[in-house]
Length: 166
Image (cartoon, rainbow, N blue to C red):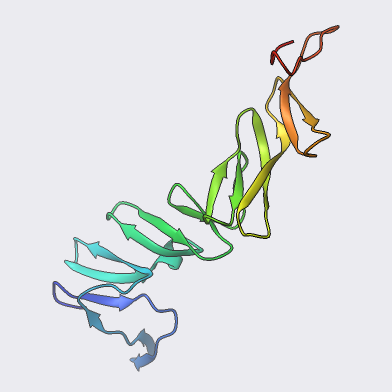
């Protein structure tokens, strides 16, 4: 245990151990500030604080904060994508992996599932819709070869691109 304002540093994944009474105990140090890629957890009952790695709380997280209620990620490792304080190896439905910004970006309505084409320059190119929301149908542009969603029309009607109506 460390005395305030110091915290026990358990943020590293590799640390030496000491054997006391046949029990393996991590050998750690007391530090004033938690290192980068870690957060401070304060236990009010014991009046102590401990530094934990962000990745231990949120897989893929490299920078986080803790408000003693929840740990929130600010930055994810390469190959992970940030959305609402959590890192995803693959973004949930309704979002696409945006490797340029390292975040999950929302698919544009009425697209329900999509993916981004990443250009050789490293920028996100066109977003291709792979599944449309209910009431919409997918159509592929002959010019861009990108699928977009258009409203479903009633029988004997067709969608007019210029007026954007049936």
